[in-house]
Every structure is written in C-alpha cells, then in structure tokens.
Image 1: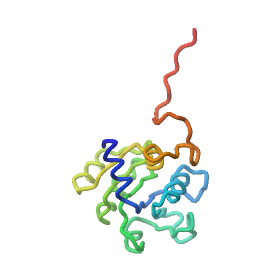
Image 2: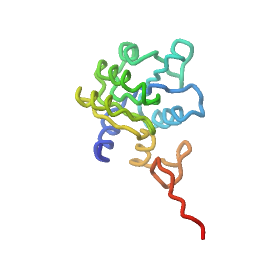
Image 3: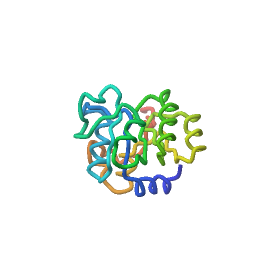
Image 4: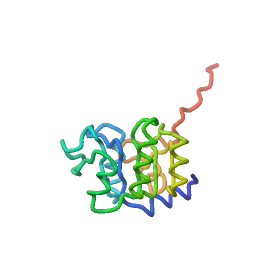
Length: 163
C-alpha cells in the first residue's frame, strides 16, 4: 500500500470500527480512538468483552462487526484491528460481509492470507501501520496523544558499538 493510497483512505472514509478498542484509557487503542474522534472520525467500538456492559468513549460497544454494522446508523468503512494477528482471518471475513471498504491492521498485526482474502473481495488492506500515526503524519499532530519522536517507524534505531 502506497503513501498516496493511505492518504486517500484517511481523506475518503470517516467511519472506523475499532476491533479490540479498550476501555483502558492508557491503552494504545484508546489513544488512537481519542485522536481520531477529535479529528472528525466516527469511532465504532467493537469489543466482545465490553459489549453491553459499558460505553467506551461515550459510544455503544458492539460484540462484533456484524452487530455493529446492523445497529450503527452509518455504514462502517474502515475496520481497524487491535487484536492479535491470529484473529485477523475472522475479522477480515466479517469486514467483507458488512461491506467495509478497508481492512486496517495496526502495528505488529500482520496476516498475509487474510489480507489477500480481503483484497480479493475488493477491500483495500493496510497492515502493520497505525491509523493515528498515519493521520498525524499527513495532517500534523505527532505531538498529540503521546507521540513526538520525529521518527516514523516501528523499528528500533540501530545501536553503534561504542569505541
């Protein structure tokens, strides 16, 4: 996926189902959700452990994408995955079933077979990238909600041996 394609996704679609969005304010998924909501995105929390028990960020929590798509007033366009890579195939199948446009897998979340299944169904696929970081990179805001490194990578810097 090219930079231009990621930019197009973030400027074209506004409704994001965040699968695995945590009610823990200090969790990375919460940071991303708060930032994206503050930038005009409609965040749809999907978390089976929290569904029916509470709201997350003042929003109804759904047990899965199928229920979210049936009950949320707007179509889900981006499915943002904050779950282990092994869970991506099932999430991808639900994303296809609900007619999502994008399957976005967060940093460290990679499943090539599920990505290919989603692509074959017509979805755009982003893997191993953070929506929040990508948005901040394109539109400013790396300082917002805890990022001000000046480095945009998920890899550690190479350490040179000391003399």
